[in-house]
Image (cartoon, rainbow, N blue to C red; front, top):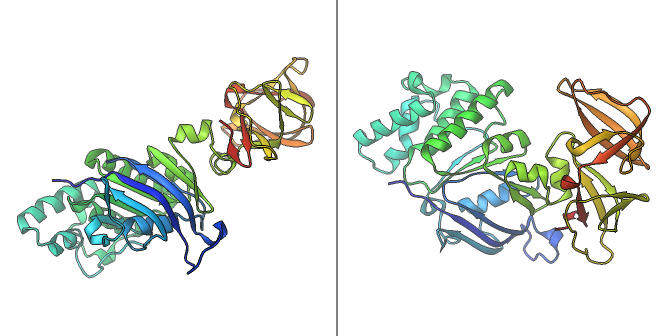
Length: 362
């Protein structure tokens, strides 16, 4: 019977210093998260943002300075990795070169004294899922990097008593053209086995294609957890706007006025009511290039811009404009005209956000 776990992280903080005093002393500043049973999650952020620290805390390799880790409501902070029933797949696959592929896959089960007939059935089932059936008799030493990574994944999947499988940058050493194959295979495996999977990566494409929910980390904070669409349409923090999407979000200083925002004296509509941010907060208006369109320069709500440059990416054009001294990029679909000189743009009010000290104003 497959074990499963809902994971709750409450008030987690971690410092590698003996006596942390200020936020900067913490590698994890404050993490409150719920990972539902059977979900596919990605932990996304640049190097040094706290992803691996968080992963090691969940797996039991590291005890947090503060906070709770609950599996199905039970505190596991003092339990070993074995007791937490976690499988980990690392960036550099841990494979026993002298053993056959079959024996590599069987190893975790033999370690637990599972009867050989059950092992055989399970190894063949997992080999079939991970496209390793044809190689079962081969020595692992002869395999390519992606073959070894498949063994590593297979070993994570072979135990039926696992609560969660964690993948730590599992495709970093894989050739780019094989990455998407392994990634789609992993997505398919998740749908077949329905086990909670947490995928750690600094690559937004990997995160957004694998996960149902993405947790974005920045400097020890979880800045947003959401679906890929939510992260795209309503970045909860300017870092999400900048880190996800290519090119990233346009940001410019603004002030609140007349139910919308004002940038350098120009009124900009916003589709929803904005709460009053705390006094003295640094206010910015954010809009993704996808939601910036060119309009007739004589339109009342058009914002006058100068065209600075046009870059053709094949699928679309990235047009950089100067709007009252601010750099604003617009994405124009292939085949659509780009104005020559005098131009005006409009921000879609539904997708125009206000940020106070980098956090979205609800």
